[in-house]
Length: 146
Image (cartoon, rainbow, N blue to C red):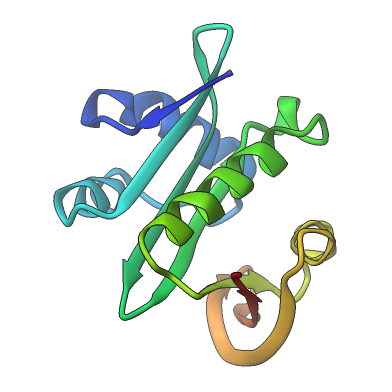
């Protein structure tokens, strides 16, 4: 495994993973904006191919995980754990004391994943995500960092 900064040249592979994993994927311009704005954008390579990626912001002692995605055919083998722990470490090195994220209320697998790694529910954002029929709420989760 190789964790490295995401480059604009990676966006083709990143978009393929995003589209395969999500019903309402981010588009290329969102990823380009994250890179342009110097968000913490990382890719996890496995056997020379991008297998997962994460995007996070840092500021005012907080980290906000905006997107963490593992290619669907490579889920449930520890790549997400490795990637999230790396993002937590990076946030801690940059003096973040808490990490926040949002997850769809319907995404029980992701909620369990984050809970297993120490995140707890701290709030709700009504109508946060697009959904097939209207909007879906997001659960706000947080992890205090030591």
